[in-house]
Amino acid sequence: MERISWNQYFMAQSHLLSYRSTCTRLTVGATIVRDKRIIAGGYNGSIAGGVHCIDEGCYVIDNHCVRTIHAEMNAILQCAKFGVPTENAEIYVTHFPCLQCCKAIIQAGITTVYYAEDYKNHPHAIELFEQSGVVVEQVPFNKEIFQTFAIN
Ligand SMILES: [Zn+2]
Ligand SMILES: [Zn+2]
Image (tube, rainbow, N blue to C red; front, side, top):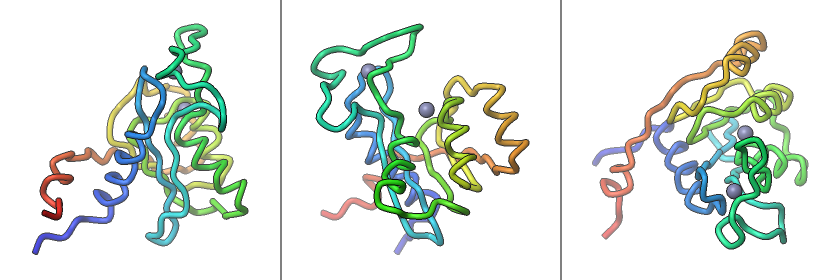
């Protein structure tokens, strides 16, 4: 019997979360992990009770949709809301984090970022991760895993 690796397992979780995204521009998922346990997850979407991009269209300013809270931020805020420490945790994201999320990740004490796809990788984000000693590693995700491990 084939066994899914931890990296692919957590990356699969982030991809599953991305299917909950309500922004049509990009669907992103993020999973925060500590000691091989999932402690939080998020996807990019509107604030609770807000209107959704999929219903009302994106609210674009300077070529960014400002309606949504990013997946990484949502996962970190879920920890804040429920009092779950993020220090020394790891985060698995479907796309390379934007500059704002990069800063939040560093400030939350997260030590490792695993991302599946490059996305406008901001040079300053790369620089800040390096400066802060945050390990950033690309983990390509194989979506066929959903078929391989499907239970019939
Ligand atoms: Zn949007
Ligand atoms: Zn972001």
